Amino acid sequence: MMYVMFDRQKVKWMVSKLELKHTHPCFAKQSVHYHEYREPTMHAKCVIEDNDEVDILPNKMYLALANKVGGSSNMSYSKKDVRNYITSNLRCADENANVKELLSYFLRMKDINPNLFYAVDVNAANKFRSTLWVDAKCRLSYKYYGDVASFDTIYSRNKYVCVCVSIERHRLPFISFVRVNHHEKSTMLGCALLGNEKIRSFEWVFTQRLKCMRTAPQAIITD
Image 1 (cartoon, helix red, strand yellow):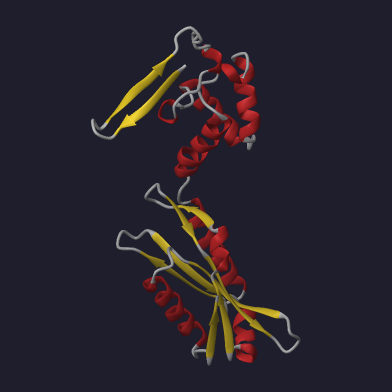
Image 2 (spheres, helix red, strand yellow; image 1 turned 60 degrees about the horizontal axis):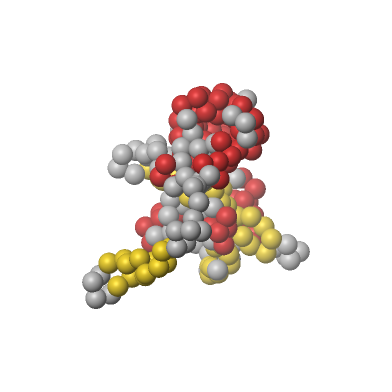
């Protein structure tokens, strides 16, 4: 047993008490790896990648890997490390998939109904930043119930995770425009995904919405 205290005058840690007779050698199987040294082995990474392609859950991957080495006590990494590897490495390999699928969806819906409005904002490097979309039903509802609109950003607490081209995980707040109709039911008037919650992003989404609706509501209620 050892007691350590910080000496403010000497500005260093000092051992105040050391009891050797109660100490014992560390048991390797019960040792804990520091975070910076915890990482799946090359073999484990290959197994994780193969399993992820067939949609096997991370927990099952970890259990299978643990069984091969005689239990989790012999593992140099945890279940969380497996999930982190999938998120930070494998998901980034398909970083454009979400954006491409979103744009493909807009094009398909535009073919079905030309009244769909959508706009996409990109940065100087032509990387996806924000988007706004308003379908035909929302545009029609706005003509009848668009005098006052609710601009809701509360969904930013459960943010949509989008993997961008820069291989950084950005959380895009989901924004909804809502109006209560004459039946006292909420009516959707459009949606958006914002790159951030800065003034410039809000200005962009309101500008695009004005282009879509042609007129601005008399009042906007925010959260």
